[in-house]
Amino acid sequence: MNENTVNEENKRSLNFIEAIVENDIKEGLNDGRIQTRFPPEPNGYLHIGHAKAICMDFGIAQQYGGLCNLRFDDTNPSKEDVEYVDAIMEDIQWLGYQWENVFYASDYFPQLYDFAVQLIKEGKAYVDEQSAEVIAQQKGTPTQAGTDSPFRNRPMEENLDLFKKMNEGAFPEGSMVLRAKIDMASSNMHMRDPIIYRIIDHPHHRTGTTWKAYPMYDFAHGQSDYFEGVTHSLCTLEFVVHRPLYDWFIDQLATNAYRPHQYEFNRLNLTYTVMSKRKLLQLVQEGLVSGWDDPRMPTICGLRRRGYTPESIHNFIDRIGYTKYDGVNDIGLLEFAVREDLNKRVTRVSAVLDPVKLVLTNYPEGQTEQMEAQNNPEDENAGSHNILFSRELYIERDDFMEDAPKKYFRLTPGNEVRLKNAYIVKCTGCKKDENGNIVEVYAEYDANTRSGMPDSNRKVKGTIHWVSTEDCIDAEVRVYDRLFAVENPSEEKDKDFRELLNPDSLKVLKNCKLESYLKEAKPMDKFQFQRLGYFCVDTDSTADKLIFNRTVALKDSWSKEQKKQ
Image 1 (cartoon, rainbow, N blue to C red):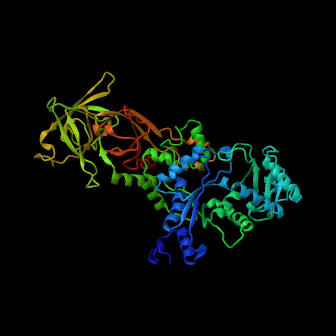
Image 2: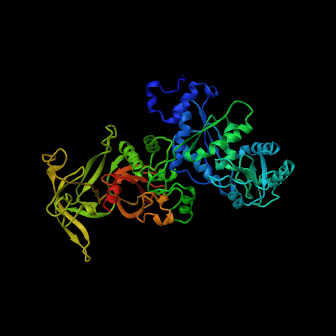
Image 3: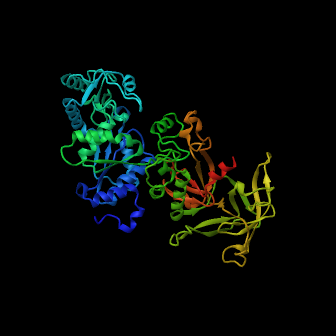
């Protein structure tokens, strides 16, 4: 057995694609060679669903000592752009993978054109001048055979001449197509004389105006695999019905025993999310989000900006696995994965998002102390940092309640709480403005309750966080939540998906107070705001203005809220 294969005793943990690969290696198929490819169309930014395909395509090659190429399926120039090419490359590398080669379907345009000419000469392709609507009608239904095009038996010389003129720009878009001549009575609709070339009068981002006739995906995909030497062409389940056509084209093209083989696995679908590139593009173009990298988007760049890590995405994909049936995964699993990863690695800090002043009336005026704060209790090597303590502090507004219910264990008159890393304090009252809003809370501290003091272990039921008014810094915090308000927006067929957006998916908090430890934080730095969640410095931040994005709350509060409704 190949040295890269998993031991027999571990085979039960293999997914079905890995099992296929191992069997092919064992049988010496393709001389034991493993080659895959990741073939995105550069017509948008990659999303979390693509991340699953990336992990499969690159992961299989990595696991079995093979190679994986990046190939851009750039066969539709009217929708493609070099901006997307660059973004796709960045996302793949951020996930931790490196391609062996970069190819483009457009690299093979001459070979694909020659293959189409070959099919015409062999009587296996013809030019059809009917409209797309008529062609679709003639294809019949899954239970009723299609009818032949009146152009199906056009003479070979005429087909060659028309196809040549199609590519020279002699005819307008939509006026004619090239179709493969296969079987109009096939039980598989994709085999009923599929369109393999159409006219597109739009400059290509790589080839300019050289071509006017462009290959369809089904025609370009398998042949590109063949030209490159792909052994395992890994696709999602919607391509199962395309596989006979994939094989038919390869059979017409192949000149030896080598064949790439297509295998399909389930797509990644998430609750409270849409994965359609068309819909995501609408959200961007209509200004319903700030861009492809809006932290509410399921795009890889959006997740990265929100504070997700490559490790959390890998762990999530490993958990949900690869199967032969589609389903919808709970977005809570993705949130759990990033929460679990960040918990192990990020520094704990204090941040007050809705501040109200707490005055310790018996603490000496002008006095300050340095309190030691542990950086990460999950990591004994993480060390600690100091946080300034003073007479006047900021606390969260909802950590004080004047008339509190019985089980409210935070600040309320007569009640004691511990200030995290500092003292126990007892609330004595509050001050309100003319509108009845609380502007200051008053308390007295117990000097014997600091760590190391006689009463430091005295138990109280509540602990709250704080920052000192003396050295805290101002920041903007963007609290993100799920982009859609319904669990499965794609299933709400009677509503426009834009009507299903969650109106509370973004709350911008302008007056937040953060401990001074964060003043040197840089874009993409990640922290746990104690008691609040995990946050990441946004790329909009400047030296004069820090902006944080909430990656995820400390706990899954959404599910709890949904159950109440």
